Length: 256
Image 1 (cartoon, one colour):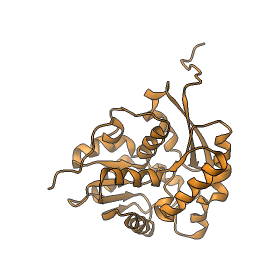
Image 2: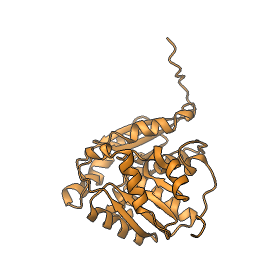
Image 3: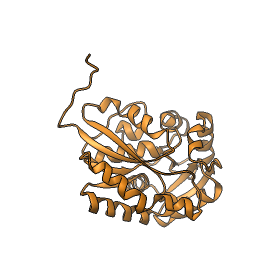
Image 4: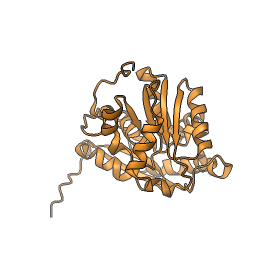
């Protein structure tokens, strides 16, 4: 029986390190990129993540001791890029992600990046400086993210948080709750809104919310996928998922 899958030595392979309790990013990544199946395949491995907080036992979940063995497993599949599909650098610091990428590439010989670095690179490339911040996390984690982004030259002018701590529960945040977070994070001073978390399903709402708010919305899953594709020289033209993945020009919104 022909299931429609044709093996190809030309298909690029992206390796994703994912939080063990995340049930959102894999299906959304597959759904968004299904039109590119003849060009790229996605391969996933997991690291233990139970909860998101600023406690050492939770921030240490994302250290090299866990990440490097996961990256090594992906390199066994001869992937062309490795990406940490998680946003821990947003509160642990972008420097921690940069060092992690250095170690991964040094150990595996494979180019690497992270969700947080992809987000920061995108903002810098577009020349944005002021953003709204929408996260499912607790208030202290949201405040730490704002401080980390400020250190990278991005001012959070308004933020909204959902108060969720357990990582498995991120997948239970409803569409309407995501919409409410994004709306609450928006401000006339915000040039864009960042929906930061790869455990929350928000990518499917981006196009709708961009039309409503009149400005770009950068969801972590979509931004991470966009970065991963660029790492294997694939330029997406994917309609229905917002301006970033459609390949449309993104400019600063008009002044109110």
